[in-house]
Amino acid sequence: MSETTNQTPTLLLIGPLLPALQQQIESMYTVYKLWDVEDKNTFFKSHGDSIQGIVTSGIHGCKGEVMRALPNLKVIVSFGVGYDAIDIATARDRGVAVSNTPGVLDDCVADTAFALLIDVARGISAADRFVRNGRWLKEKFPLGRKLGGKTCGIVGLGNIGKAIAKRVSAFDMNVAYYGRHQQADVPYRYEPDLKALASQSDFLVLAVPGGNATHHLIGTDVLQALGKDGFLINIARGSVVDEAALVSALQQGVIAGAGLDVFAHEPEVPQPLLEMDNVVLTPHLGSGTHETRQAMADLVLENLNLYFTSGKLKTPV
Image (cartoon, rainbow, N blue to C red; front, side, top):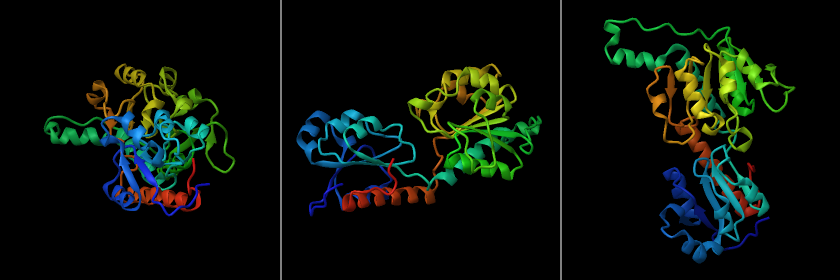
């Protein structure tokens, strides 16, 4: 448990946060900004002993080498549900508590998944370009795909996966899912084999965490099983998909199309994907609404303040 003192705790921010959140943190704590540090070795030697907490995000994460440079580090508070960019093993070895912001972003991420799904099915983004470029004056836009009666395979039926299932079910889609184990309290069909799920799915939606356990979970074999009439939707992490295999599958017509909110080397996107009309690309905006980002910011502050007053976290990893 963290000891309560009258001294203001000192924090290290790994990367910029939402301006309002960062301002609040700076008003309540002593703060160093790692991105402003020119010589990190000198900085850690001079100030490392004083830093008790780190605030980061799912994008910026925190490397083990940073933790090891902070001998009195007690807690890492992250803005985001994904924590694959944080060296959790090192944190556990050093007794550092870690929190994220689960729950508050489920609906908006699920909305993004469904938006990508209906876009690739009906070609909404492509149709917009079709009209804007004047092609409607001389051509007919290709037919899309109906959602009702189709099968949506969900890879990872956590809170976000369940929220996606609820949305696609409202459009009369059949839902099946793959995960580490079958869940007793859901009405959806469990498929213990990922390739089998892909072969049965018209749309394969990825909603698993990133990290070593899911690295390149979706490769050539799964894409081939999804087939020429199947669509891949990824709102999870870019690392979950073998991006080179996906590009090849799209180029060769192995699958029908894709809706992608995340990429292997964000913000870089492979050039071939930019040129494909059957691919919808968004800039990792899954939780990107005013309401959800505010809820995430509130939870970051709540975790910080709770830890430094009681030694506990509301949402520990």
